[in-house]
Each structure stands twice: as structure tokens, then as C-alpha cells.
Image 1: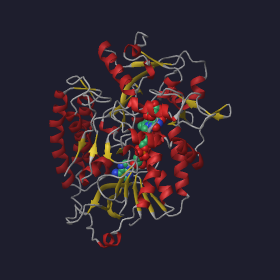
Image 2: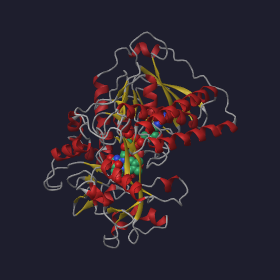
Image 3: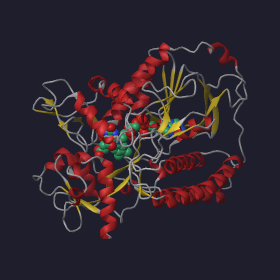
Image 4: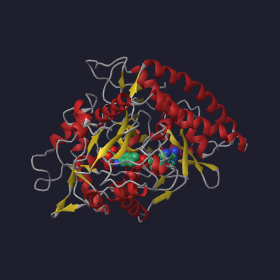
Length: 536
Ligand code: FAD
Ligand code: SIN
């Protein structure tokens, strides 16, 4: 399989790029599972944008949005990147409307809501299923786009580079090995522009708001191929994941209650009904996420209660069903009427601010490799992402990435097409009784990350995690090389790699900044620096 553009991922970043790139050459866009299994499709709150005057919240400006983003990022945002992405926000909304996303309206104008860390109402949304609306519109557009091949259940295993083939030349990407999950065959996909749009890695943690597909494959692949990785320690925990110990099934365990609910007036209370967040920040329940998640963690440890509560009982009857129908009806399905009962919530891993080092156009440190969306670390989010800036980043980076690729065609393309890429070598078939090792290790990684590397960290716990992960990595490596690959083995291999990178970065940061909080180094260092991991 050969294409001018090989895109790994079908969330907002991957599909936005695929639709545009197909006007300039052949595109293959892969999704390791079903197309709609992505963080994008699960997004609830919306997309942050300061829209034209007259339509926006009076007094809001792009400068305000930039300032809020920088403030949330705790000194580590790259201001030029923040400006560049946020200034494109209104164009992104135009794009999405053009693809058919029906954002909600109120009194003839876009309905705008607020989330933590935002000084104004500026989140456009489609009720509480904004991501589903975006993913559906992009997928429908993509399906009608000529020159674009969409392949579900195609799992990218590893990048193919000249370096890996032992060629003495500037290292660059030539394509990827891809597992077709239905046939079990691994094929070579060739392209001199490979774009990682593979999303985040919430599944590294036991409790997460992310779908099962979020196993950090892009970061792991890029690292193995030699690209720089940065700021992996900044894992964002969303403050309000539904706490439902009686639940069974992943939907129940990972159900998010959008921050937009707090934007509409819900408040966090403890089991005594106290608004404890005000003890941590004057913005209370609407402080940036790192602060609110830490406040909850503190409150849970202080009181010994298993959760805190999100209280919307003061809103008028019918409000939740009208404004947040998905959340309202899902909670009802789990037996909770949020108009009458406070919603039990706990923080859960939600978003990854670190990732593959990339500029705003997605250019990584490895030639021919681009990274866009959540997999990338551009400097937009710094040490903590401002709510609803992520869908925005995915769309803006897709536009910029295409411009960059078109402006810099690869001069040695003809030569590269002649390079002989070896076929995949299959290991032995896995004996079914050994598969239990995969499930055991998967569970162990996620549990140890939750216990040792979550909201509040210590050197001791991080070192313990590092030692255990080293052993797990060895076990997984032996398993990987000894068996025929399948999606479970591949995800386990990527999970252990990403968990190790998170711990490695966390051990290097000897301060508490944004999402990285350690009781051993509670202060801020005077100069903010990125944690960069370089393989070669
Ligand atoms: P994704 O949408 O995650 O897409 C990744 C794609 O890569 C998937 O198609 C997956 O199958 C594919 N993939 C991964 N690995 C491989 C592989 N090895 N081979 C082939 N394909 C692969 N952000 C906001 O801005 N606003 C919100 O309101 C909001 N709400 C959220 C609510 C929830 C519950 C969650 C989980 C996240 C939310 N976020 C929100 C964050 C936001 O949704 C994501 O950061 C964003 O959608 C990421 O987009 P993406 O295109 O980078 O990746
Ligand atoms: C939410 O709806 O609370 C999620 C918003 C985000 O992650 O940006």
C-alpha cells in the first residue's frame, strides 16, 4: 500500500487533515478500531473560540483566551504557539460548521458556555455530545471525499525508517507496518509523509475518561523510531468522573460529567455539603483542572470518603435534561437522578499534555514524521491544558500540517520509492493459556500508575514505579518477540513504553508545576523548562 499521505488516526486531527490532504494527493487514513472509537467522539463540553464581535460574550477578546491558556499552563506554554493556535479559533469554527457540525444556538446566536479556567463564556457546543457531532460530520465528509481511503481495524505497529533498515543516510520515515486485525496479516504501508494523529494515553491509568483505544501508540512508535518526546509527566486528571462502584462495564467506570456542568453553576461539595474547593482557590469549582483535581484528592484523603459530589440540585427542574441530555439520561440509567441527588465524582486520567515534540505544523524531530492533535507536544498546553482547547488544537494543527507538507516536498522521494522494505517477520502463534500474561501485565501497569504516579507524587513512589516498569518492560519485550502479534500484545507493549516515559519525565522534574505535583519538591523552580527525552 502506498500513499502520498499516511495518516494514523481518525479523530478530529486525523480526519480534518485527511479531508484536506486528499485535494493534493492520495491519502490513507487508518483507525486501529472502529472510526468512532476516539477521544474526539467522546468529547462533551465543546470547543473554545472567541468568535466575532457581536456574537461573543461582551468583553471577551482573543487576548483574554490567550491569557487564560497561559495562566492554566503554569509558565510552560510557548506563547508564540498559544497565539498562533488561538488566533485561528474562529476559523476552526467556520471549518466545522462547513463540515456540517450543528453547534447549539440561543436567541439566534451561538450558545456559549464556560469551563474551568476560562474568564468568559466562549465554549461552543452541541448539547453535551459535541465530540460525537464533530466526529460524525468529519467522518461523513471523509467518506464522500475522493482520493481518500479510510481503513478501520488497521493497527499501526511501528514506523519504518531508513535508520531501522540500517541505511547510512539522514534518518527519515518511509512508512509503517500495519496489522489488519480481521486477517491477522501485517503489511507494509509506504509513504514519505507519515502523520501521527493517534490521540492520547488515558488507558495507562486504572481510572480514565478515555476509550479503550487511548493506549499511547503514537508516542511509543515515535519514541522507538527516534523522535524526541517531551513533558510526559503532565497527565491531566479530569475532576469529575462519575463514581459508581457498583457499576460493571467500561462505560460505567469511565463516564465523564462535563466541566460545562460546573460552567452552568454546579458546585463541588464534600459529604458534609461543604464547598471545599473555595479553600484551595477563590475560583472554587471553576478553577483550572489541576487545582480542582488536587483539591478533590486532598479532600478525599482528608475525610476518608471515597468520592466528592457535584451538586446541581439548585438548577430549575428540567434544566439538566434540556442542556445536558446525554449526561442526565446516562446517570438515570445508572439509577441516579441528578436533579434530586448530588452526583458522586472522582478525578480520572483524561488528557496528556506531553507527547511527540512538534511545532504548530506537526513537524517532529524525525524527517517525514508529523504529529498532530493530542499525540503532539507543541507548547500550547504547557503544564496544564485549558478546558476545550484540545479539539481546537487538533483542527488548527491539521490545517497547518498540510500547508507545511505542501510547502516542503521531499526532494529525494524518487530514491525512497526504490528502497526495499522487508516484509514483516511473524513470531510463533500465542498459546491461548499464555494470553493471561497480557491481561495480568496490562492490569498491573494501570494499577501501579494509578497508585504511584497520579495526582500527588513522591520520589519514592516514582522510583518504585520505575523499578517495576523496568521488569514489566522486559517481560513484555520477551512476549512480543516470541509470539504472533495481535492488538492486545501491541497495546500492552505501547502502554508499558508510555508508562515508563511518564515516570522518567516525572522523576526528572524536581519541582511542582501544573499537573505535576510532588510532595518532595513542592516549590516552583524560577525558570520553567521542558522535560525532553532524546533517544539518540
Ligand atoms: P483521537 O480523537 O483520540 O483519535 C485518535 C485516533 O487514533 C483514533 O481513531 C484511534 O483509533 C487511532 N489510533 C490510535 N492508535 C492507533 C494505531 N496504533 N493505529 C491506527 N490507529 C490508531 N477536548 C476538548 O477540547 N473539548 C471537550 O469537550 C473535550 N471533552 C472530552 C471528553 C472526553 C470523555 C475525553 C476522553 C476527552 C475530551 N476532550 C475534550 C479531549 C479531546 O477529545 C481529545 O484530546 C481530542 O479529541 C484528541 O483528538 P485526536 O484527533 O488527537 O485523537
Ligand atoms: C469536559 O467536557 O469537561 C471536557 C472538556 C475538555 O476536556 O476539554
